[in-house]
Length: 368
Image (cartoon, rainbow, N blue to C red; front, top):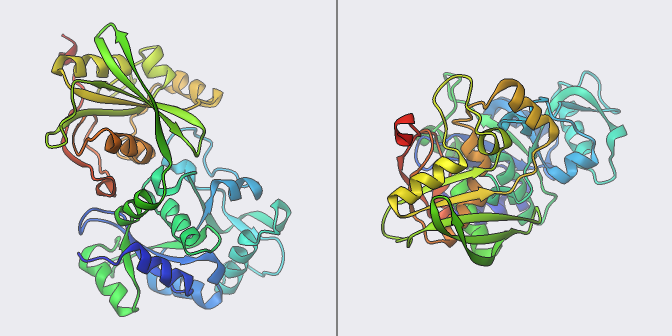
């Protein structure tokens, strides 16, 4: 499926036009209708409701969500659902809140730099989506891409997005999306291409040092990476020489107290790769990369794990770690991955010049 370049999308958004954004590697990717928030009026919002027909959301940066005092829709400290904020409504200037004019008013208030928490009420008819700091370089998601594109267009980093549904009410894909874009004379681009664009023009991590460490599984080369957005250091433990032309055994994970320090197992379902198990498998093969992403676990997250056990995150967990981990793997010369993970969809992974050629789930027999 031929896609327009990110520059074409950026120029269309700068002119106030909506665009179609695809998150997949092929015809299986979902499509979103997207328009910079600064141009949203009742006509634009009505177009979203009538033509796209999916849930209408407002993508905002994490910083803007904090300025407005927006709270997550779910109290769970885990999972992708925490990107949804509690729905909002403009505190003044609307009637029922559901009309196109009322919802456009809410978008205008939420994106007005002069607005604060007192200018909004909850619940409402607009659903804010919080984008991670770093945009698509942190997570290859629609909210991150929407804010990135608006910012690159010289506009406020905020955009209205809605899923595009086909005639049967399912997510439109492939040629159905292409027909939608052509019917409305819209540019159509992909998140993978946006990632490529940002890699060429912007950097979010930098290698800050290289060291040797001796573990109970033998020596590893440790590469440290400074994350400019979060001001943290991520680590890559490398065994052997990475050959860019050969598939490489890879594990990407954030360190978690329950799994990695307490060696806890999920209460049901298959066991998972832990820090120790991953190092052991890589050492046994003689070549591989373990990427450890820095994260500060909240007290609520640790208590949730202790209370309920380790919840399996596939297929959502990969998108939480994709961006930063992929940048590190790309820097190390990895292109094809034998990924130590349960099978799961990795959207826009080609934007980092990466390809998953095999999933390697953990099985208890590997510890025998």
